[in-house]
Image (cartoon, rainbow, N blue to C red; front, top):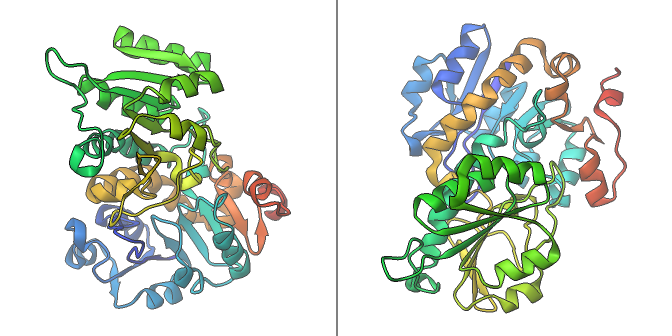
Length: 372
């Protein structure tokens, strides 16, 4: 198979869809890999490294899209990239379609087969291709939030861990999944006062057993969320409904009751955000204020640590990339139910129920469109 890796063009996005090591795995199996020149330059993955791994370097993204049977990316395709997709071509990347009707419309019109990293599943009910970026984003959320709490950034002028004789900051984390767990680990490491809210008592019990008395857990209700965030210094939004728009757990009224200079880091912004006051920002202009509350809502947070993120992502995606290349998209999805769960759009048909519900669009099952 001819596999293409274009350079990412989203604002301040320096990750790359495949590392040279991943390219070598594909070329060793007889596949051809075409990489856009300087796709990995920003993170010291040079064209020479890709050539030594067996890739062919192409000058433009248009050449990559025109040549490849499958495109492997990181972020959702931008309008100019959607226009380059062709009927039957496979796109393997993050999509986050639920809050993005325009992208959905474009992918449906393209006739391409689009498989979303964030909805691929595993045998344990997890999301293995979302998990590594959730780990990165969860850990980053605390260092981003700590920076935003500095008075020069519009924050309250607080140090997360305080000092002897001065209280530490109160960090409230909505969601005890991968993002929340990693955020809690980092916040506790900085000696903040940390509270995690979740609707799963089982998950709260796991967190309690994992972290002990250092972590405080609460069952998530409207009352509990309102009470905790209005007294918080830093709020981390780490909720997820796989493939669907994030629930709006933080109302604008709640934000209006928060302390002046407190901070919301909405990690759920890729799926629309969990605060009514959230809207996507970029690394170039990451924050804004609503009701004197600093909002950090960068939609590609892991892009700030692009080298770490690229290698973490490739470790997870490589087995699926190899399966798609070895068998072709249809056969690979027919034989692997977890990869099949990643199918969002198939040759003009929407195949992910949560996206259809979010956008009020007709939807078929992956099994139906694959003729199973």
